[in-house]
Image 1 (spheres, each protein chain N blue to C red):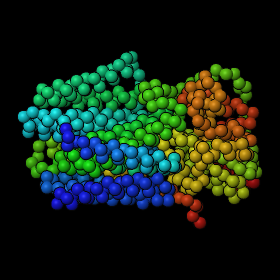
Image 2 (image 1 turned 90 degrees about the vertical axis):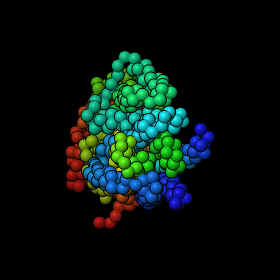
Image 3 (image 1 turned 180 degrees about the vertical axis):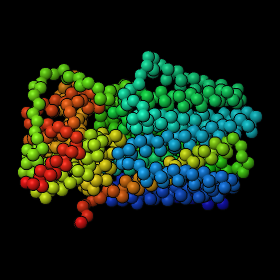
Image 4 (image 1 turned 45 degrees about the vertical axis):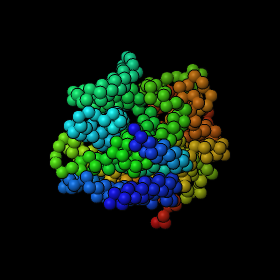
Length: 462
Length: 96
């Protein structure tokens, strides 16, 4: 029986690896996800066959409750809220790992005379990582949902307090193991791990949430892996390591896309939300040229090629479907339309692609930054909808700009750029955008959805 | 301590496998990838099941059961929402 269980875990681990591999190609991604789910099902079923596990009624009830909330949340969540969903899910995974560690520690405390050094250390590590993932994810969720202010929350000696907390946790853990289970100290350790998660995420600004979500994703994997060491289960270790690695890679990609180091994101307290525009150091002509919907429609309809640059502003205004009708109208007029997607467009890695996919834009029409940038100087019109910092040319040349060095979409190289924007206010980073004052830029003011629908109407009449 | 060495090997090698697998994923799929990976991290449900296994109801078992609820939300919610997203990815417009 044990052999069967172990073999099944091996199969499950293989299914996770193959599933992740398939998840890497749009054509096979859905199958990949199904394979991973199958792996998980196998792992869960054989665990129930384990002879230690006899508490069936209670367990099935717990699984039932969890499944209900899982299915309900997956069904009702809006695609714009995906980052919150993933954030919350990270938190649940972390919480589960932390709880397993706590339960194991309690079992040691009640059954053993002395705490086993190695298993207790692992459990305490699991508690720390799991606890941080849990509360950190809840804070990230709150920030994304708008329940907690998005701007960095900072106070004096913040880094020192955090360092001190970790030190306390380590020393407390040492004392806890050697003093053989002091219960108040145990509670204090749990409290510290939760508190550290909160303090870790509150100083990080709303604009950096994609990095934080990826990082916590990695953490939730690590927490699962530590749990695997604790219960000595290799399926857990393999899966935890896979998720840990994937989260780290996405974190790295996000940091690169913003030209920031991970340390800078985590400890830099960067950017305010909706703050006043800071004028850049370099002087430039501050004339704004506007365009109305009618003229913009004509320009678009008679262009040969158009590149649309969507930003989170588009999604926030729920303009995806309107944009898709605009694309259809333009294609009927023989215009070649492509989308340029910046890696940090949206609120998490790849978020914009999902939002456009939901509006029936085929993924073959969505171009990544490296592929589309050489095409801008051959393009007639770039249409920027609700994007700001990712199209700011200052990132290329103005070393005084806070976003200097960040890779951007070179929309200013196209013959004409039309920017649909609510007002002249600054983007997430709180800095002014010189693109808006360029001689070949036209500003089209209004809410993204209304403006795009107006454009569709005008083009239909042409 | 020695009993953990084989596990450590497996952990490190799996990390390498993970890096290799994920590096090649195109940006289009990053959100589904993250939510799919997230669902896999709900594997801690196995730890939770083992902890909540005993028949007698003590504090450990109760915590284990709560962990089962959390992990199940993670697993079921994660895989279903990933599937819902991937379902929307289409190559070409379907004829109307």
